[in-house]
Amino acid sequence: MTKDLAGRALTEGEFSFELKNVTDPENPVVVQTGVTNAADGSVTFDAIEYTQDDIGKTYKYTIVEVAGAEGGMTYDPMEVEVTVTVTDAGNGELTVTPTYPEDTEFNNKYEAGDSWTPEVTKVLLGSTLTEGEFSFELKNVTDPENPVVVQTGVTNAADGSVTFDPISYTQDDIGKTYTYTIVEVAGSEIGMSYDKMIVTVTVTVADAGNGKLAVTPEYPEDTEFNNTYTSPKTSVQVTKVWDDEDDKDGSRPKSITVQLLADGVDTGKTLVLTADNKWMGTFTDLDEYKNKKKIVYSVNEKAVEGYTALIVEKDGQYVITNSHKPVPPPPKTGESLGSYSWMGMMLIAYGALLLIRRRRRAMD
Figure: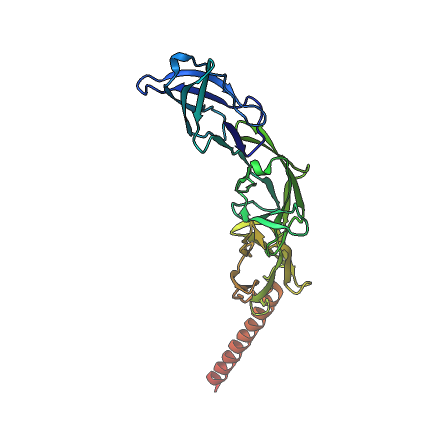
């Protein structure tokens, strides 16, 4: 009989066979075991001797393959039944006639398999990296003229790891080398600089035996995609308006200080507004976003004694109106005495005039 192996080359002594005498099916007898194949696939048992005591008898034998435990190997469960008749050929010779079935070839199949899981990493500068934020694509470029997209839309984890689905290989890939590229699919986020790096990976496939493959990926030194986020800039304009009857009482300060707040928190940035800058100023070069969330800016005026402030915002421009009701100033000391003296002299003169008139009337 013969042995055939699909999936890889057959080697001498690789498979084992057993011969049983099953003429009495209730009492089968192992005649030979541990017989192995030759390199060409032939399987030859030792000769079985017969004597004149066997003349006229018929014997039944079965030949089976002893299944091994090699991984990836499918063993043929076929049972070859052989019938042997013994007759007298005369002159001290016997005629031994075996009858074989049509199929006497044991066919095994070897299927080795393994896989490779492509991996790279992602780093984001200028902001906090979030899960699923960036997308990557894997191509098979073994044939550079006919690249094939293997996987796309694979995204990063929160820790920056990027893991593709495993790529499987079989015994058909043994001895082959494959080339892959991994790139980041650039998005359109404002302020984001996308890494244009191409990671090229070479994968070799070899037979490791026992149904296993040795899949060896060779990565370049740099497999980290680095993006940089720079927030767009914005500005906040502030205008001061005075509602104090043109500073009638002179209580208006020479300057006021405006504080800038981001999401309600003091940034430490200030503007000093004066008449010289026409009571106007602008906070410039401000990040519009923090961790890609828009920052809400507001302003606050340091309190001005005697004034109340009203802050109104429109389209990022703030108008601060300070209101104050002037009080008439008290008269100066010199002016007060002069007025009282004049009034006193008038009263004295008027009293003297009345006294003169009364005396004239009395004399008349």
